[in-house]
Length: 501
Image (cartoon, rainbow, N blue to C red; front, side):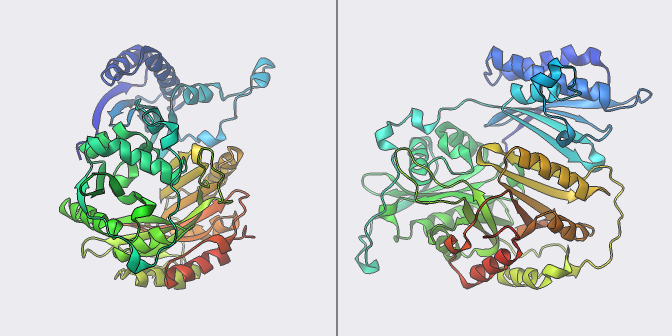
């Protein structure tokens, strides 16, 4: 995919190069039309990140280098400060308090707060032997859909009156892939379908959709009514961020008056054929559980369920419309293989063996499953290799774990405490089962409140999903499933959830 430009500097660990770094970033930021104030704030954050590396990442006698990279995509301008120095845990940084600072009691935290306040998103990545990275991100400006459309045209769709299947009038339609003339309509339809609750917020920005489609980050298929053209249904394959390697089918909706006409099945088939032509091995999708429609559409297209994410997104809320949904939305994970390549060998915890075997049988995977029986404790890492994907607006965090350190459980405890203090409501941890040592930590994670949620097949990797709910009441009776296996899986997840009501 031609979706990213990357520019990089390799620098000695010396603060005298800071001015050159800031000038370099400023010139690149101007190419994407960031305003002078935005560039100044970004560079304040960069200055703090670089200073931390120079002053704290290496021992005085070490003659090392570090990297400052800029990545430009359709959506964002990102600065990455990378080093292979001493490990760092952002969760251990004390939250900045003006009161403590004025009294001389604040030991740290001001720099961290400065970095966070100067950018739209601040992320820290531990790469194990690959070092650590600080990502400072500025989102590129695009108009939200409510700046294009009058509020009178942004109300939630009304559900049509129930019809007998054979009396539904058929509307002729054809399939198209996304072009600029339909972008605003897609964003409008998404808003009227999901309100502000859809996790992938780019769907609300028409120009972002166009840019992502042009770059290959999005494969967007539409059902367009013949005669007087209008969008009847939409689905897309998301291929940005970590989803470049784990493509997700999402942004799916059918306007209520056009349900039951096969729109979603046809556009999903067209989108999957496009994915096959790009040699994508497999895709996953999430079906909502407040109704069965999206799950049934995925099942009709050959998707198989493999997990259930409990309380993963906020309830839907629309302007001037009272929501009838009283709890966070739970989603079913579905997977569809697009080629015959068998997944790699995996190592699983014995106490979940029966359900994991059932999941892979349901997926029709011929996979080499090994029971992890004897810990090897082979890791020499001081910090685990993992990625934290934090979505604060949705009170959601995803932690992808690739290589655990010798202190893995303590690291997760610290992250969990920090995330709960930030009022993150749902925390998902994805454990790479291809790593022989991962499974030995499952019981330790379950002891601190995580519970089994299923499997995420990710082509070259296979992830075991564990969840943590931060004092969220979930009524499992309100979770709707559309297949017998999903019902069995839900019962198992409920049994594992120690926080259930």
